[in-house]
Length: 275
Image (cartoon, rainbow, N blue to C red; front, side, top):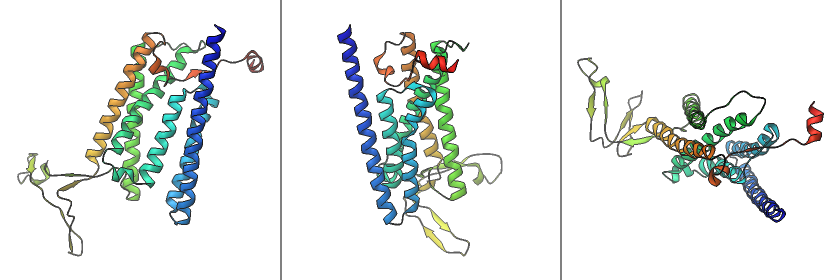
């Protein structure tokens, strides 16, 4: 028994070393990127690097404030997700260079948000002072709804940024056909299809024209938003199912345990100070 506890303790130390190593390497990379962007005069990217460094501290802050122990796998994935979204995606333009980069991150976001939502309910279920007791099915539904809500709010934020600051966080899609009731000459709400679109010509207010040369019609953000929500849905469903079977088996699932925070037990001295 003592040997088993020692082995578990050794593995925990090794895992914490992995988290620390990943954190230090990513932090050094971000600082180096920040310095380079500063000397290049890209102050917007300098701000993004600073924001990334702040976001890196969130897992540790959550652990202290909520008195939970984040699994090492979850913590590493969160750090890598932040780095992939802010540094690689925005500054290194991976969103443009790699077609499915945004899709991959939104799928991961759905999975992680479902894990966070599931964990919040799981922590409440374990609190003896709380009367909340949800079944595994409702815990899974709550995690799914939490993840989808975060995904929708993020799309709202992207739309707001694009409208107010003329950014392109909702990436556009080139399509070759669409239908619209605006072209119905009878005004009877009949959708008129437009097919075989090869290009779009923009006519400016001064009469000048500009052919975009994109090979089709530019859909402004709609396809991207729906795709992001769909892959968020997939990630949320996957973890909700994993969490359901984790609770159903009373915490025996090794995979789910890597993503669900555990409550830090208070020591006797700490309890006396609170009372």
